[in-house]
Figure 1: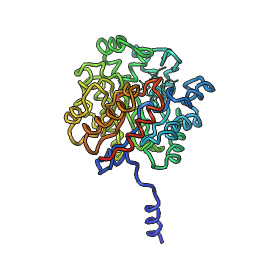
Figure 2: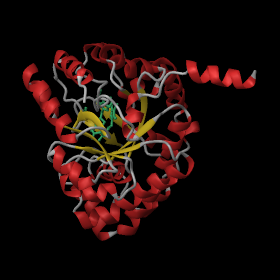
Figure 3: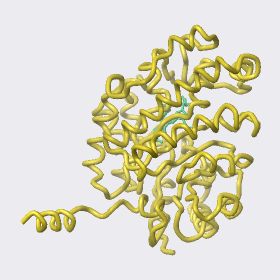
Figure 4: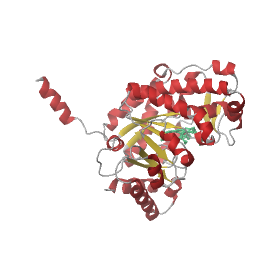
Length: 357
Ligand code: CP3
């Protein structure tokens, strides 16, 4: 009876999501597709929610809203990945770093961290205490999506989080974090260390609650020169990957850095499973530089979605051809830009899902 029940459960369980098969290098008929920032302001349905709930923090910290917003692109486009609606800064308040995300201004850190005494006040992140809504939302998303797509979690990389926390918000020249890096490196290292252990724990928490793959955003790592990347970003990325691989060896980890053409080989040294390329590097060249064992994602300029439908189709085909068969997740080279026509996004998904190798 027991054996029969197990066999039956196996037969009725939905197949693994295409995205996981592709990352593992299994034979797939087409590349899976999702878009960074696929939930957000280019969607009318999201704008309606924003009118009713003007606070970004409320939209991203209430279970029902998080689930509803995460599912908006899923309901319309049926992507192969459904990313949690949240922000890389969401863990900060649980680490004793008050922040807000303000319309028109972006992220604001109320008391930017620039001294050893302030770093001492930063608490290690305990996700189950600070962001229980994230675990609840992921659990619900996993049920809703039911393996027809992969549920994706994400975290900010230590250097990128530190750049917001030290600068006090978005930055152009990154002068405050570089002042710290190049005059008081120990202080910055102790902050990066807290982010690394906290984000490793956050990835594990997301995986335990339903995330089937996780993306690390090191959006601003490329503000560092290669030697400085090796000191202030790489070791902490590696620490997150090593820690997570110990407890969750099967969980695919994707790494994204914007403007990463000069750092590709170094990104691969982190031990991640997938490197997400921006559009400053040719897909065929990126593939060659990363080697056959690394899966690749991304690469299509988000601006392409402002082009004609024929142009969008051409660029998708071009990227897929250059990436070659398997180990490729079709995506943009950065998040969808506000103002992107929704019908062009629909076209992107339609063409992408119609591809056959
Ligand atoms: O991809 C998705 O659909 C998931 C949602 C998501 C958001 N932020 C929602 C959001 C993800 C994955 C992020 C990650 C994030 N947040 C990054 C890394 C990715 C990247 O773009 O490089 C960064 C650097 C942040 C920090 C941040 N949050 C910025 C710079 C901004 C923009 C400020 C602005 O007003 O344009 C945010 C706000 C934010 N996070 C928005 C969204 C949809 C826009 C504000 C809104 O919807 O009200």
